[in-house]
Each structure stands twice: as C-alpha cells, then as structure tokens.
Length: 468
Image: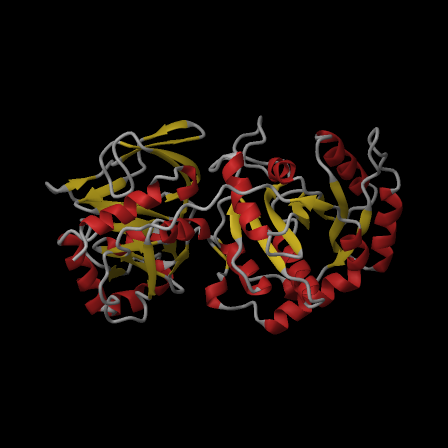
C-alpha cells in the first residue's frame, strides 16, 4: 500500500460555481497525461460520483462528515486513494456549507482538514473584477486551518477579463505564516461544456452524455486556462491515513443478493455495496427495465433509488418481473428498498401528467410526482421495530431528496408504516415513512451503511436465514 499521495479538494464559493465541471475536466486532463486518478465526492450525492467513475475509469466514493465518523471517512479514503497517483475530491455546495449554518459538520472545509489536503477554490467570476479579491480574502481568512492550492475563476469573459482578475487578486494579503491565495487562472465561458440537468440535478452517467469526445473537450478547456504541470508540482505529497484492517472473510455460506442497477435504479453508495460483499453477499446485478425474470437463486434483493418516474412505462410493461418480485416478497424474501426502489414496490406511480403506471404491487401504497421539491435533508433513523437491517433501537444516518410523495397508503394487518423514528436538522419528522412488511423494508431515506457497521451484516444474515 502506498504511504503517500498527492491530492486536491475542489471547493466552490457557492453551489453552481462549477465544481463538477472543473473536477471532471481535471480528471480527464491528468488522466490523459498517464496518471492514475481516484475521485471522491463530499456529501450524499449519487450523480456526481457516477460521472467521476466514467471520467477516471474507477469507482468514485462518497465522503461525508455528518453521516460518517472521521474514522470511517479516513478508512474509505485510504482504502482507495492508495491506488492513485493523484486524488481529486469534489466538494459539496459552498466550501463552508454543511449540516447547519453554525457548524462545519458535513462541509467541504471539514473534509479537507480531515484529509489534510489543500483546497482549490472555484469561484464564479461573471461580471466580477476587484470583487473577486474581496471574496478570496474572505474565504481564506474565514478558517485559517485550511491549506490552499489556489483559486480558479470560472465563467470568465476572455483574456482581458482574466488579466483584470489576476491584477485584482494581488490585493489579497497572505495570512500570518501563510502565502497569499494564488490566482491560477480563469476558465472561459463555454455553455456547450455544461452537463445536462433535470429536477434532481445532472443527467446520470448511466444515461450517457459524457462520452470520450466530451471528456476530451473538457480536458482541452482546462489545459488552455490553467498550468496543470505547475499545479501538480505544487501539491504536497501527503501521508495516507492507516485504514482499519479489513474484516475477516465471512466463513458462513454466502448468499446471493440481487441488486437492481440500470438507468432507472442507479443511486447506491459504493461503500454500501462493499460492506454487503464483505459480509458475505454475492452481489448479482439485474435490470428491472430489461430483465424478464430475477436471476436464479436470489436470497434477497436491494432496490436503490433513481428515476423510476422517467422509465415508468417500461417498468410497467415488464409485468412478469413485477409479479415475480411481489410474489417473492409476499413469500418472505428479504427486500430492502430506498426511495425509487420503494416507489417501484408500490401499487402504482402517478407521473406529472397524472397518468397511472402499475408497479410491483407488493406494498399497499401509491406514489405521485410533484412539480417541486418535496423533501431534502440529512436524516437519522432510529429503528422502532426489528427490521432486516437491524433490531429495535439500532440507529443509522442517511439522506432524503425527492420530488415525489406517498399519496395513498392502505393499512393492512401485516404492514408497519413507521419502522423508523426519523429526525432531521429541525428535529423529529412525523411524515417520513419506513414501511415494514414481513421481510420487506422500504423508505425514502438512503441510509449509509458506514454510519452503522452492523447494517450490512444484518441484511446478509436475514438473507441467509431465509435461504432457499
């Protein structure tokens, strides 16, 4: 294992500053120089890591200072950064934004300090000049504990504009004992390079839009604006944290866990999948869009989130698989479903036009899409019932983000609608369902299994108990 690696955290002055585009451009540019890149994403986002993986050729992993402990974040980072020549960590929101406005939990700044990596600040500079220097001075002075790689201005208007910004940045004083925040260059406005978006953010990597030509254009864009050799040379060779020793391989009989993964279901934390495999699950991927039946010998199912509403017609037409999943669930097959996966297990899904599409019919409820955001935020779940993920009293942390809602929930004798007590930043939430029916557990909350190391082994154990 490598003991040291060069790395960089790409932080934004605010959401929308261009962090993702800059990160992908840097991955593409350094990769075509022959460097092995490993990428990470701060925060609970699923879409950006998918694009990182396409650009880098390797899975990207989430880091999060609120969902996960410092130790868990360092373990994830060390486990994968040791394989890299260069590590690029994309931040979340603005550099100092996190769980609440008074603390740094969950922020990019917190993660940069935990990882001991310098920050490259990406700031929008459209119509800005001397004001960029004021912004830079404020960001540098707000937390003297951060190390800085420099500042990149995005959305610049041409060479003359970049030169004005460069001159203005000479006004930024260095902090005592620290060098002045360097101006590394300006990225010109190139609207055609932006990634397509929809209601939950960018178009997913599984749906295309980031092919080889697009990555080449991004690499050209950043190479023309920044001195990438100087940036790389100026990065310190940081020591990697020592990861926790890997768990001993499970000696019990493995189980076959079906994981729904296609364009409709693609929101999974890579760490969740790793932990399930470590606990003894053979992960078998299948597509509710394309497969007419489940893979043979399934001992359990994991249905992640995604965009079932965009593919509702295709999902509805695949009636054989819908029926099989419902029948297996009624027979006691352990099934864990999050957000879009939960929507798929319901009776029907109503799209924005009010059209009804039949889903699996396993859970006695329906969901409908809304024209605006329904819920967004971190969540802490305390189990109020014994579930496939753990017993009463177990706790886990995760995130919730959706434009849909449960619009019809029919009480039945075998359904427990509130298997979690859920809290958010404002306290207890009374409208956050966690549906439990036999061995089926479904909720809008995406739980991170690193927040409670017992979750993955519990799910695998439940699958093993019901094997055959």
